[in-house]
Amino acid sequence: MDVNELFSDASSFIWGPWLLIPLLLLTGLYLTILLRGLQVRHFRLAFWLAFVRRSDVDAEGDISHYQALSTALAATVGVGNIAGVATAIALGGPGAVFWMWITGMVGMATKYSEAFLGVRFRRTDAAGEQGGGPMHYLRSGIKGPVGLILGGFFAIAGAIAAFGIGNMTQANTVAANVEEEWGLDPLITGAIITVLAGAVILGGIKSIGRVTSAFVPLMIVLYVLGAAGVLAFNLEEIPGALGTIFTDAFSGTAATGGFVGAGVAAAIQYGVARGIFSNESGLGTGGIAAAAAKTTHPVRQALVSMTQTFIDTIVVVSFTALTIVITGVWDDAGEDEAASFTARAFDAGLPGNWGSLIVTLGVIFFAFSTLLGWSYYGDRCVEFLFGRRAVLPYRVLFILIVYVGATTTLTTVWTFSDVMNGLMALPNLIGLLILSPLVYRETRDYFREHPKEHKSTEPAEK
Image (cartoon, rainbow, N blue to C red):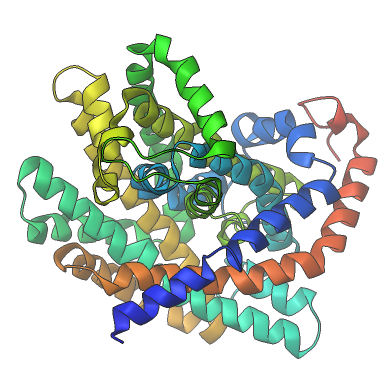
């Protein structure tokens, strides 16, 4: 058995129907019930804090509510929102989209809990920056050797995973798309990406926060507008596409044309798996970004952070999915062509070459933003393991690996990344379940102390 086959088998088990998929989905459902549907009850307040209030100016922290949200969005709104959605539909049928939505809705409660604990147990490092996330709340929230082991395990997996899913695969995807669309040599593309990434990453979270808060909303809006253009040219097809998604979620899809027919189990499996890959609810990364925010209470930043899952999965994923289903490209191609579904859908729905251009630009900006977000996740994990002295060498190494990813043919790295992400999720989910009573109690107490926040989008000040 070669290395790639070993990682492939490990990934299939970790992300299969008997381990992470039910654990992620059931944890999100449990937290939704425990918090009494907080993601629905306080939806307006969460968006008000994120996009209107944007910051608790005098609070402790490194960046604003909005910048912390932008950093999390930078890491999660990536190629998974383009190629990942296409793969889910290719392997699970249109019904997989419904299960991605379900994953997103319950994942908002998971993301809330991660962000709450990230702020609740954060600490200031030797350079005066905030450090938080699963490695901290697992170690400090769960007493004894169990918490220490879980926290250390997460930090090791996170520091390594950042080089895969957050670095090499992203740079490689950009270089490949640019070469296909414009014929530019990957050596040149790799050099450009490396220099740009280095200019941002070496400045730390404040630099990352400034850059992502400026261009992440822009890139999302431009991509969504392109997808909206496809829908506008096919308005009469939207009801039928939605009907197909809901029907196939519970009945499966028969094979037609070149499409590989999928049953209900496949729709659930690939919908949940790709939904988690898209929004990262359960991986614990949201807690790392949230810990850097200037906030007066963990609840406030946790509400902001859960909007990231909504934007990623309910908004961006939905636009991608509807363009694919409406244009019918999923129905006449084999599963090995899944990666091109989105570009073909945009080309079919828009005049001229605008479709493929929008998708290529989307891949470039989405992947580059993911690089920035994951570089921060990795350096926080390294700081936890080895202290502040290890952060700069890690950042430099991360930047150099960007060039390697852009100029190298990747095979094992993709499956290796899947495995490492799964190894991040396992200790984090265990910790969320153990610490869920704390999340519930302090959330309940916060809203009892601030009753006006139940009724108004403008919370009372302390």
